[in-house]
Image (cartoon, rainbow, N blue to C red):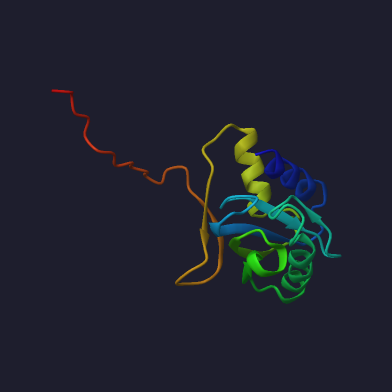
Length: 153
């Protein structure tokens, strides 16, 4: 959660600057971070946050610069077994995060909700449709199904 707060602070402090947001969406095997981890990429390619322990951040930064310039999200796949010996695979969604300006963007809205201590959920779409993240409304019904509790016999 600390990294998310740092990302929010950076975006809020630079409302005229576009960014790219990289989200770790799928892992297999040994990985430094788990799905849901995020990294912010600035227009010059510098990054804020960690997704791989330092192995992939520079490359993600290069893709992030392209995403900022093109305005189109991209899904990256990395197999760290051969080059890095980490024995893992990662899928990372890199999506444009437009300048917040007066209207805000996904990250500034998340920051606003967290500051108000409101419910905040982000849906990340990376398969079977357009790539990207969206903020789910607080009134979206969430039902958790669990097995019925049984008393010991």
